[in-house]
Image 1 (cartoon, rainbow, N blue to C red):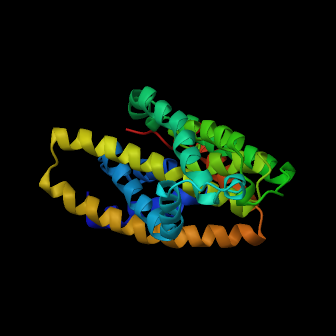
Image 2 (cartoon, rainbow, N blue to C red; image 1 turned 120 degrees about the horizontal axis):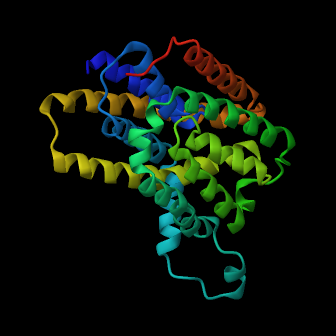
Length: 279
């Protein structure tokens, strides 16, 4: 893999990880179109670790606040107990909500690697199908609840939805933002919720895949492209987080819905016409 390919793939990962259009689908499609060699899930997970770093950089204060509040002694006054700090409420639900996605990743690991990643029809259907569901959620969701109004049932629903993100084309941010909107969250709150929920699962998946890769050994020539891809995905991802939060304060998700529909339908058509045949 050349450094140019690593930069392009890193930029695509940073652009599409947080915007609800599926980073895994775009990485796979680019390789199909240009016939690029692939490092498989190891390289993809490395790029995800770059966007994980972007999350920690952007939401560093929030994560520090959550950890400090969790580690601080519990207040003894009844008033303090009745109104615990929001950060302390959020920490355990974040971990709890990541369990379904973690289990799905472990159970479907072999299927993702051997089956899901070379199925243009499946990816096209998931891109378009999730686009329609996202439109319905944005159109009919109440969008009335801010971040501080999130309840435990919301974490459960959105955590279960996140488990579907193992299928390329679904999009982790797409499915969690959709579930958040269906739960009645404001658009900005649904996006922030998605970002908070994504950090632990990306960290766990990345550590697991890199541990497996380390056991097999890295070729020295692979390290530089991976490092360049990670740096690129971090920088681009950081910019995209700010863009999406600002965009959803004033706009609907229709732009992303339209993009998913066009890309999904186009992928299906090209596959049926025989112009797209993964090798």
